[in-house]
Length: 235
Ligand code: ATP
Image (cartoon, rainbow, N blue to C red; front, side, top):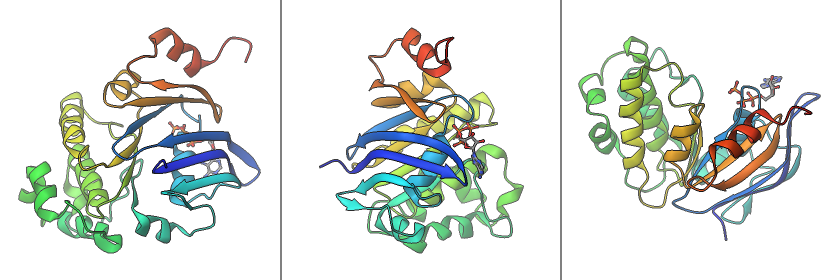
């Protein structure tokens, strides 16, 4: 049984349908790259999995349990955590307090303050600082650490590299490789398609809310990705 399974999922924002009949499966330990242009529906799909924007039709199952009717806090408690686009840290809290917010839905597992500080040593030095005084890259580290603190089984990452300098992006993705242990399954939304494919096992491309290409990340050619990403001229 797959750890996470989406079957013909439709997601709406009010009257606007953003995701059309989307299906995929994710096993424990697998990383799936979700790629597509701005507005393709990637964030909407992540929000549907977390229950923040519930799917209107279709099925989302986690380890065989239907998530479709569950509120977001129950879904988080089952072991699905998100690193949201824009980080969404708590501005009045310190770095450490932000990390501890991730323990509200904590399961047993390898991640703790000590192991997050081991992954991102700079956060230990800044543990008492207000989160808003950190650089963008350091804030992203806090957002990743906060999600890991819940010891998730599925980690949803929305644009980890957005707005960050190349060196910081390298640092974040080096950490990403270390996070991929103990069977954690990952869905990664990333604008840098080459990087997304390099760090994932499988990829799924969305265009205007529909899947246009799915395959093993190492097998799909640049040409096929470009076609799936931009669509053919008659679309
Ligand atoms: P980006 O890379 O820009 O974040 P995306 O692939 O994540 O793009 P979504 O943010 O999921 O795309 O947006 C999919 C569609 O849903 C777009 O047409 C967008 O305008 C629309 N949309 C997203 N959020 C809302 C919202 N809160 N209310 C109404 N429409 C929305």
